[in-house]
Amino acid sequence: MTETLIVLDSLAERRSKYHEADVVVVGAGVFGCAIAYALAEQGRSVILLERWMKEPNRIVGELMQPGGVNSLRKLGLGHCIENIDAISCNGFNVFFYGDDVRMPYPYIQGLLGADGKAGTKTGKDKEDGPRPQGKSFHHGRFITQLRKSCLDHPNISVFETEVVSTIQGDHNPEILGVETRTTNATTGEKEKDCFFGQLTVVADGYASRFRKQLIPQTVPIVKSKFYALELIDCQLPSPGFGHVIIGASSPVLLYQIGTHETRVLVDVPEKLPEASPANRGVRGYMKNVVLPALPECVRPSFQAALEKDSKIPQSMPNSWLPPTKQSVPGAVVLGDAFNMRHPLTGGGMTVALNDVVLLRDLLSPEKIPDLADTVAVRRAMDAFHWERKRLTAIINVLAMALYSLFSARNPELAKLQRGCFQYFKQGVTRDPMGLLGGLIPDPMVLAYHFFSVAFVAIWLDWKATGLWKVPLLFWNAFWILWTASVVFLPVMYRELLV
Image (tube, rainbow, N blue to C red):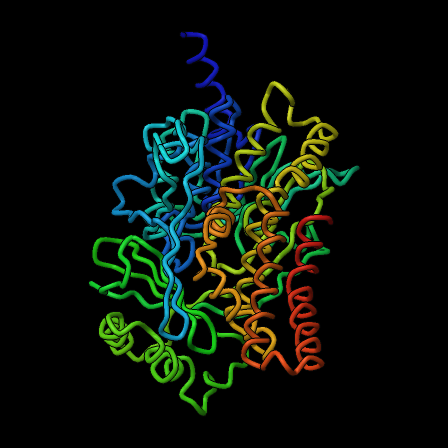
């Protein structure tokens, strides 16, 4: 015991005095905090760097799917969603031009409950243990809890400092650490600082300043923006469920983030005519197009939030950034800096936390005693690139495919949108919700259901057109299948096979 304390004190001194550790993590967001904590739990010495340690105010990263909750508990961080007024999410209620269908998460054996124990299934219909639940919350409160866990960990030292560049070896491309600017508490001036680690993990978010240097072949593709309002005491049609509204030009997402607060995210594609300056911009779009499309019980609180002030609501870009293999020794880029998808399905934190669980196991001291062994780390990262795809490819492809359908920018996509809703109305929700929740890591299940939706869309189109118009029916069927393939296959290929 005494020897352990001496070693911990020695490592803590090296971190605080010499700024040296096994791992330097850039960014104390969801991924950065989780990977720092996971590696520290294995006995690694970790330095965690964050530009701004105040509670962040973001409009995404507020809905965690059940798969993400399960990964959080595997990491020993399940307490971070307790005592922050988080709301349980039991599934989604999808509204389609006034009609709706409620889709709960399916029971999945082996999920961890709040007590850390896995549920079991003892009979055909008998369930013992927790049913899957997502959690929604104020993003800043969750991040504060994650950071507190890191601050309290004896193997982690947290520094508030702005990382400005990486430090590279003189004779090889290996990254040795990072250079930062730290504000002097006495003078207020920013002073140069350096932090060194055997491995540098860059997790500085969607607007990463190091992505171009470390994975230059990747550029995020911005699809649209989410504009956010916070509704107070909103009466939701299905409390305890997320809500997706299809009826405006682009989808609207609602979910409760506290006892009294509900987040509404309005998707606005680039150059949307209904949100043009001539139509009074985003606020005009919200008032004239979105408001009438909402369930009647939601409209009063939405209108009150919209009229609260005259500012343009807070927004975030919705981007697609496929994952890419990395080859820079001594450093890896991860989290949103590495891989993004449209946040419509709320899959970002599930991907991030699943990645941390995988990396924790691949980089464990039993497998890689010394993280300075760049060959071993490179081998582990190659394995990580492929192993993560069974789950993350599903979440990423589903997010991009559903966004294409729910925003329906052409007649064929509108037919697929109608087919998708009818598919759910027929009661086919177990597998789709399992995929959405990060609970079924099987890409072939996703492919089966996506193209099943296409055939339902074809059947609905045939009924609407008239079964006697045979040439037209086959022509329409061809274009629906072609559109489904164009939406699904390129993204699936890029996410799963590259």
